[in-house]
Length: 509
Image 1 (spheres, rainbow, N blue to C red):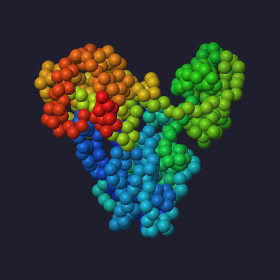
Image 2: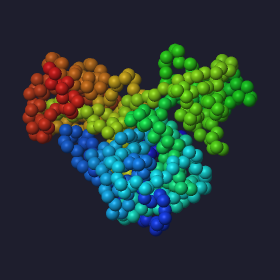
Image 3: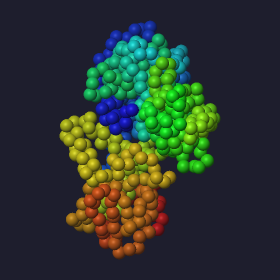
Image 4: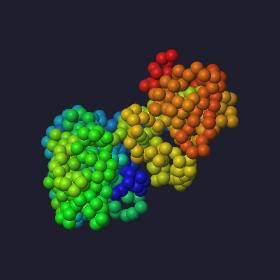
């Protein structure tokens, strides 16, 4: 399976150019393909109090209803303004984001009804998996031209991979030319949408990836109630049973196959599935000793079956427990929240205490480092050096990147930038992106808890301990530091010491 870290090699397709092929006037898909332009705000971690710089990006979408457009999450994420346009010279329509999934990389936009689109029939979303070697047409609006670009190729393979921590899904590989700007556009086989353009592999030629129609349908079904809940889970880790001795140890005969449950998501003693159960079937799908199921002649990971066979949030399972066959009706569980969870569409919380900047750590911090690897040489060198420092220091940003929260409101807090220049910080330094562990021996649970802890201090000194191996203890005279805060804020044009969600907590003295 592809770990999320390997997405370093994927180039998302919402920036640069490609060459358009000639389009047919009778092509029914072309009128449904939308050019999407966004004004975006960037996240300024080193100086989070500053108004983020804005930039523009461009991608593609496809009409899937009277006034709805489907596209990639990365095309429209953190946008302050989104417009859609169906055809060169057509009316530019303002759109709003109504649903988004960062893990599956899909987003749904809505715009006011426009009479010019009344006679356009959106393409059907396929209900079947594409067949390998099927001829596929990829539509998009890459930079370099205003007309729709159409490229052709074949479906190369279909895989079931890990899209995000605890999130698995299908991925379709095609050899059609997919280039920056195609993000969010439709891939068509026999007039139906078989996928949404997502990315190309930067280290190879003619390898592009689609989000298949099945994942699209699951996303659209999930957001019918106005919010995205995400894919449910069953158990955390299964062990293949291809070894004869292990199979014998857990009571399987020669005709039985399955996967051994090693780690559960639920610690409820009443949860029907137990550690060391052997799951032999999920619904009507038989599980192989490698943990795979067969669908339309193709093999995918067992997780593929969950949304298909689920009924009222439960799945029927056949298991072998202590050598005895059992039938279970196991409830599906919500995906665990990672300690480095995604921000979604909100901005990160921050707090400035004297010369120290504190920011909540999230997935975007690490994604920004990942993206630097694909950038210019100097940024690439910086990114590798930063990663090396994190590894040497055994930073939780790396060791816990894909780990679930240990308690409900757990959050890592980092110092994303050097200390602000002032006489109180002379001779003191904090490593970049250091993770805060304690304040005056109090373990910090999250950034809100940090603000409360600092607000309530009455000690002479304030001490900060960091989680990295070999980190220094940082100590300030608390009253001197508080007295210096107005000057530090003025010198750095900081209007408020905290983000709007944290400021009332700090002021509640």
